Length: 164
Length: 420
Ligand code: SF4
Image 1 (cartoon, helix red, strand yellow):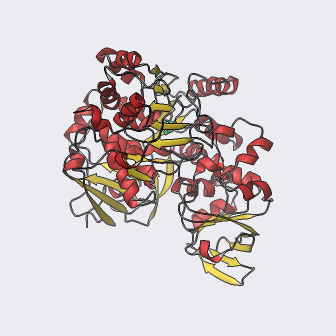
Image 2: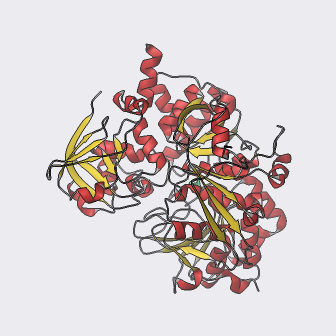
């Protein structure tokens, strides 16, 4: 199963928590308004991101709460994937569970400048900087977890197994 | 080689004799917790995917705590549907609005027992590690999965140990230990790992106090945050469960990834400044920080001992005229304890507002939201930008007694000044 994502990079530092991806203060606003508050700590990102863009981040991306709306909102914005030095574990699990590709990749925050082109081969755990022609190896996921993403999430996988 | 607490529980729950860190296992969960923030999404996901029945309703514990009493029509509707679903599925362990915060209620009601594997739709599910349970937070999809299957996948975590020595000075609390740990070792020292708290200063803590540390385990990235279950644990649980409870701890020859020693003697009260939990300074070094709102509440520090200590400090004083003090007891039981002891009267006489047991403004839900430019000092667990209201407000984390002293003076204040 090959899952390849390509997109323009937005860069984030360390410790970007899930409150920033699904803020309480905008939770009840209509989506068009809520959208403008997602990852509000990066003003350029908020103003200019496009569907198909991707995120490169530092340590502990997605630390904080268990709210699944964090990866769901990124997915809903059309973000293709997040490659980070490390992740908050619940965010990481939630992302896999909703089929949003995330990869741990040491050195990734040094390997990209904002606006460069990234290509992620998710199953192979390979990250390429297409703008610089560089390749990095991330931390591979077990086959079971790649299958969850390929199936469209943990519940889609379960319901297709139940029907099989 | 022996096993850590995490390894023992995951081995038992996955039907193995032994597991080692790094292995993936599928484990049967003993308790599944959901609250009004994450549980409704979980059962909607179940329905959307064609699953109509919770496999083990008797393992479920459901709490309405995040938006109680209902904040608006949408929240009221969510609660109404949740009650209907709970009834339809035959979930008996349902704690409705006013019962308290999930992480306070589960231990109180005897659902968090030593050696159990517990998953909850909330990151602070690590709290029950204080009683020797392997408990951890998951999101709504995995909550749904656990409800359908009664099991979930886990990576067996490495374990790190915090070896706590010495004795806390008066006015210095477990919250200060936890903030110091975060400040010294960073907010991800325990990323993907289990934590065990050991040593004389750990065993000296009461069960209430242990829960503060385990609760904030997630703030340093931990998957589980344990204390061994000892006589204090058993005494705490005696009136709360009819089940046979045994002491539970790691094997003596268990292997640890790292051991961090900390002498808590001479530790000063600590404050986490905006906007990260590891941005920590001793209270004496924070300078003059005016406080618009002081909050005593949350699953971290709104237990009986926390609020009694804050009330004892504030007794005979009044809240600064330009500061609001908000007190929200962690549960109905705690509210009753504080009423009987006179602590509630003390708070009211000092000029505090008292709220219904629940999360209140901790997660930015309601009942004390901050305006742009406002500073809060709170005994909660997170100070992320925008956590308690406006993204232009500032949250400072401290212990309940530091919050109380700060409310009196209208600025962040060393509680020891009031405790001589
Ligand atoms: S009190 Fe705060 S941290 Fe605890 S469960 Fe409620 S919102 Fe979450």
